[in-house]
Image (cartoon, rainbow, N blue to C red; front, top):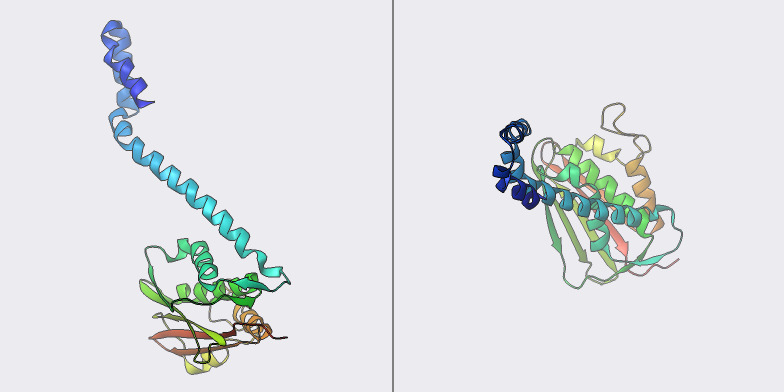
Length: 222
């Protein structure tokens, strides 16, 4: 498109003086030189935005399996990455994600969508607890007997008092201001982990951050 416009401009000597002036005036009005220089980066940004939108839609489709009642073979790394992609706008330019994953992690028997909701609740709370810039550490490993996986989410945010941490899994308990949280996220997370025959715990210190630890069996035994 720009090359076509330039072709017209390069042949403007064949135009009348009045036509030349109109073109010059309009180029100045729309700041043509700036647009010409900036257009490639604008197009690139649009293409990147389109690609990101496509990825978000795919991630949302994956994430929305929350109500599924069928146990699947779940890749924990992939599910956590899906959640991080959905939270990208909250994390970018503010929080650095550190992934510390043991090699050759096994897939686990789980309700993938429900685990996504747990990861979402924990990571969203961590982002909320980091007021300016900070870090979130995500660790996955097997336990010593190779029957369970251990997932840790640790942040260096504002942390909680001991009494607050003790109530974190209680229904309707929230540390957020009215209208910012229902107080059900961590309660639901606790029940989801129980349903997977797993365990979830929290460690926190005011002003130093919070760590959630989840233990899940690799093979589900009903």
